[in-house]
Image 1: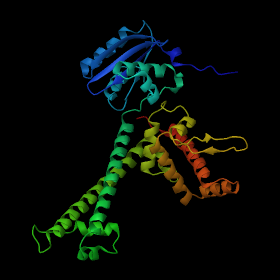
Image 2 (image 1 turned 90 degrees about the horizontal axis):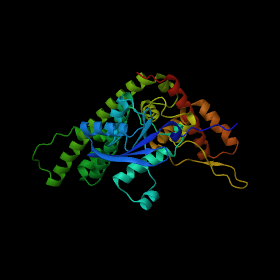
Image 3 (image 1 turned 60 degrees about the vertical axis):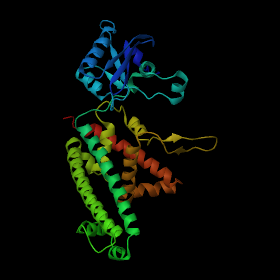
Image 4 (image 1 turned 180 degrees about the horizontal axis):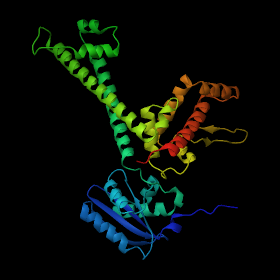
Length: 359
């Protein structure tokens, strides 16, 4: 027997599409048939948001149900989402409109609000995207964002130090030759240069800047170490079994938890794999029957799965046995990696769903 799929139009009487901006929000109320009932633009302060709630209530039938479809739920619309959540209003993240459709239909705040509501009306009820939650999940996201910034800044700073050393005078280059990057940074950070020396001005300036950059790298190292400790503490508090899995560390566990966010956001382990870009894509044709890697989804989560897979390939006997078995079946390294990432996505989802602490 075919399963009956409940659609958004079956569950809600109206959908309120909201196009969010820094200073204003534009909303459009649509009925279940897609007809525009009313539109309004309000300010983003407390009075404007209260007016928006009253506007939506006034255009919802008595005892009717409404769903908010908000663009930019983690950006300009975050304040509105927090207010809606506190008020017990159902909301979802409006799908991003296709560029081709936007070019054909034009663009304005009013059109974008209507398009947001139309996009949600076309979905089945179990496929609406629930915004990610605040609380510990948001704390993890902030730590991960800052970690990426610190890591990228450190890499760029080390590259700059290497470039400055490369064009330095023979004395400095000889003093640093043969040392590891860590020891080079430590030697440069320890330089104590007076305002004036017998060195040429360009070499004196080079040494002072190198010393400043080296101390900045030490500061970034300390920030990254503290960030790592806080990630571990939060992951341990939210889902301790994650860190017991082979190849899973605080950073990859935090990425997995952040993508999962909260109960109900990801409906199944297959959906989690699709979110991670780890679901196989069939490319069968004629006598060819195979799958290829998925290039879509959350690439940060996909990268975390890849890191776990590479680590398990090195340290996990069961994973090495699996790889050998698949190779005897004629699988390529790329295909085996795809299978591993899909398996890891399934395992992480089940662990998080079972052991996640909501407090």
